Length: 344
Image 1 (cartoon, rainbow, N blue to C red):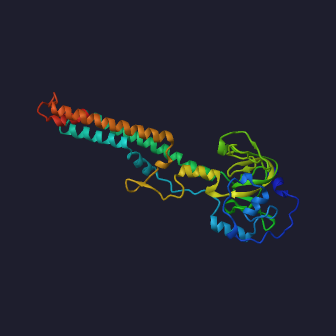
Image 2: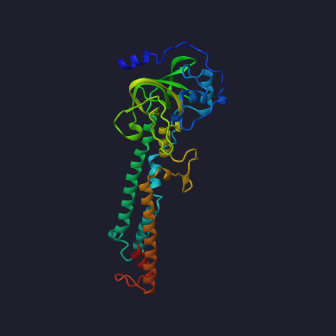
Image 3: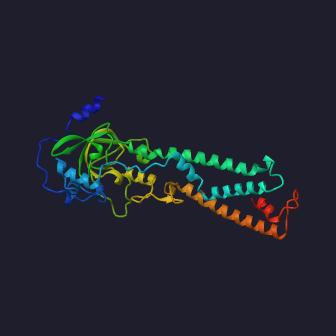
């Protein structure tokens, strides 16, 4: 659009002359910085061995990219719908229901009415309910798995940065820590940045907070007072995935890829950071790390109810066998067989 072209045609800053940046190597560059919002632009530039007016050199950027990897979200292998369906059948309560269904069918198959199809109603009903529940849960989880894919798409293909003293357009995955990013209206922030220049900058942080209102940003340093709680989204920082709705500015990249705020959200979706894929039942992927607190509490509650049900069934079975309770419709059948059916 015309306003994007105009924004890109104007250089942000007083000069675009090429000057030699400080002679530094990536070995001296610290990978990250604690509380970058509490540092001045000069302190940030010194920490990341960059230059606010000229940015990194191409060689520095290549070395940092090789060290830190591309600026993109990691996407773990997504379980297929069939795998998710099978995983739904491995829950404790589901296994308990399946055992009860099998026991019900087995007991009725040895009874006098084994030829009567209606005698297997209980077992069949349990199977149908379990399969329907597993199918719906698998489909829901399969669709929810697209959330990480959606997060990875919350960016644009390329962005303007300062390299070797020149404003150049590079692909977003090539953005590294220490880069000086040039932002304009309509841009999507490619990484977590500490603003060093801000001219009426406003961003939409809906991706992080859910709030629809644009947030005004500034390059000014606001020193945190002793005892003052840390701000989750400081006013002098903009974050990956947020769109610039107004103004123009510059910022030094502090975090990229999975180290950004949006990357942490992706880690919560994908599971534990840096851990190898976990499995359950020997071969199936373990997706328990992705469960919400409500799902975890429901799973615990279901387990407790299942244990109580097993204890009650055992007590009923023992009492029935000791009292020699038999099936009134088939007095010749053993008491234990009848009590299994009652327990189920």
